[in-house]
Amino acid sequence: MVETLTVNLGERSYPIRFGVDLTGEVRGEVAALRAAGRKVAVLTDGNLVRAQGPALTAMFGEAPTLAVEAGEGAKSLTGLGRVLDFLAEQKLDRGGVLFAAGGGVMGDLGGFAAAAWLRGIDFFQVPTTLLAMVDSSVGGKTGINIAAGKNLVGAFHQPRGVFVATGLLATLPAREFAAGMAEVIKYGLLGDPELLAQLERAPLTVASADLAGVVRRCCALKARIVEADERETAKEGGRALLNLGHTFGHAVENAAGYGEYLHGEAVAIGLCAAARLSQKLGALTASDVARVERVVAAHGLPVRLRAPLAFAELHAAMTRDKKVRAGGLRFVVLKRLGEADTRGDIGLESVAESFREVGAA
Ligand code: GLY
Image (tube, rainbow, N blue to C red; front, top):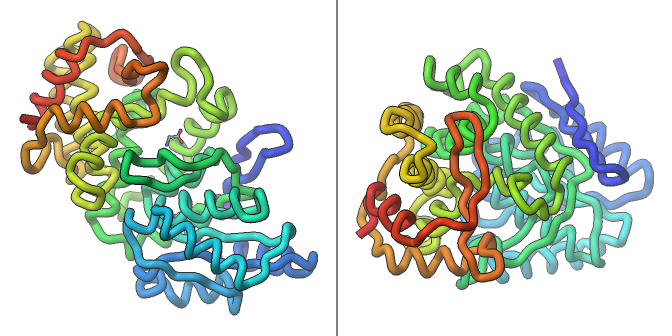
């Protein structure tokens, strides 16, 4: 059964299609675009070609495909250059369409290349990791990393459609599935206490009967948040709530060196640090913090740094993060488990203590 959720953004609205196998839907979209005289190109990564080669061929046929090396390293100026050169080689004109098939890296990189090529062409997302299905493929944030920080260069560029085929998760390595669960847990913590309770009762696995339902639920929550604050300009709350755990997490990724922690692993540690910070603000109890750590650990994710990182380095990385506004650090904190808020008035010592409690030196 195929279900559709619409992200309502006026003329930039688009459908998210959900199903176990969406080969026919993707193939149909490609055929319709071609029938309309539009060139189609595909960006993917080598791991996906190895794991899902026949599925990619079934979806995209002979469409020209660029398979880049998997990993966060592809989200770089060099990686962007390769994709733009590929689009140039394929002579994609303004009617050209790029499909980004893969995890968050492919979506962010492909989306940004689509935003930049000829000042913007259409693109579709075919997420193949849990993280991309529940988070990065929805909402139009695209971009790359530079030495100064993660996602510092990018654009808001909404896809024309997203195809979430949960059957593709069958070949996802367990570590990658766990990393995606950090974002699922994030949704429970920031706005869906029922989801959180469900995850606490029974950790979600790739074999869970309700996997597709949980993915849809996360996308629905994200869609509503993005509809209300597409460009993250709300003074309080809004889309920034989706950054729960990310100010800490991005600092971990940056200070440890990209690739040392998967994004989701760093976010998992960030969620635990955010819970501890919320406890210092008097909003959470010690038993709430323990619940956060239990649900994170139950999904195979770290609750502490694997090796200490100096707080000075983490702090330097945080100040470079794009979520710093007018020179001040802003954090997403929990008012309770299932409700979050943004705060710009948090003392550095509370941040340092929270970081130390998850293993910073
Ligand atoms: N991943 C956070 C956002 O899309 O706003």
